[in-house]
Length: 98
Figure 1 (cartoon, rainbow, N blue to C red):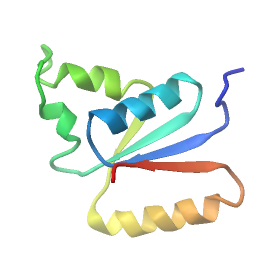
Figure 2 (figure 1 turned 90 degrees about the vertical axis):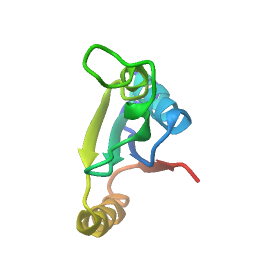
Figure 3 (figure 1 turned 120 degrees about the vertical axis):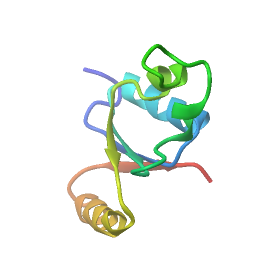
Figure 4 (figure 1 turned 120 degrees about the horizontal axis):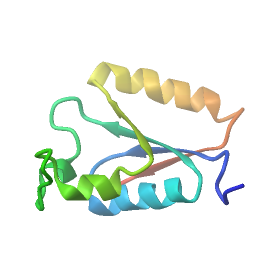
């Protein structure tokens, strides 16, 4: 059993530090859901060094063991409402960059 098994984490934002934080939580057993903008996605995808797949090599580190979801503006409200209703039944942590 992992230290954070059963913990649900929602990662909302972009950047290396936020992505690495989520990757560490996932490595400790948490279920991490990464929310991304549908068109631009995470800015880390556009930072060098680039891998053969044309995405940044940092994505392999910061997105490890995560479930990425691209949201539109309308889906944001629906998703946040769903998170608020699930807090009573499950432990949910929201990680964001300020």
